Length: 311
Image (cartoon, rainbow, N blue to C red; front, side, top):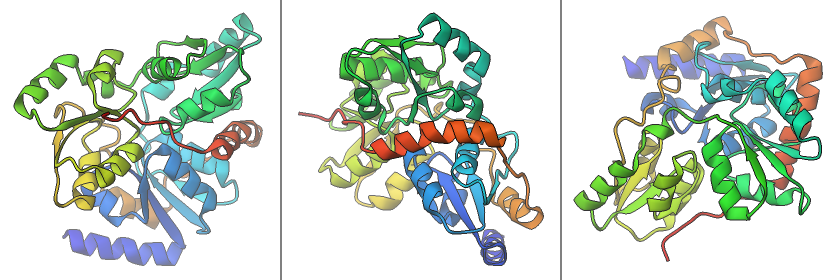
């Protein structure tokens, strides 16, 4: 059955001149049919470079919006319209405008996990892979409003020493990863390296050996001599880690780290997206133009957040 669906997807991709982008948190079978898989930064870069007429974005809505911002003349499809990001909805344009009014001299660094309207009001976007470098690109001494993820913002503040104003946003999946999970797994696997995402709680970050984006975790796993690694992020990343490192063992820090929205997309919904050209994601022109300035600046800065690794 799966092989038949995969063949159908290949046929439809050729007919539509389409490319499939999939986030590292997608289900295994969707990652397997993607042309490109990656973290938010990698997929943003890929979206800016594609030559296909149609981009099928297997992720959540803010990712498809970013692709649409970068590709106003291409068709961007989100297979599951209900695949949203709770964190992205934790701050809206009105709230950000009020925050900016209270801190008129501050620069706004906006995590890419946000709506197009919020990006349009920001100075620069970032991802977990380059948040530290983006913060360091702001003029020395200038205060930074970091939205919406308080945990990533806290990590950036500690890494940079910058004066950062945080809001109350968070990732519901990453905050399920608790210090007691780390302590328990260290007892069970004393020789394993513990890798966690900077969206995790500060107490969890403090207990980790490696703190990195999903792309950073993949790079670390390829380069490390460690044979066992405990992975503190959404469990979808384990697929690529295991595919790319057949001689190593990867253990989820907790099986509770599942994002239900990332798991909405299936092979069947990818087929329907290509067959019916659904669901097209568009961003109003004025909003897209303003948001693109913040996204382009992020891509120009590029780089990677320095990864905390074992000594």
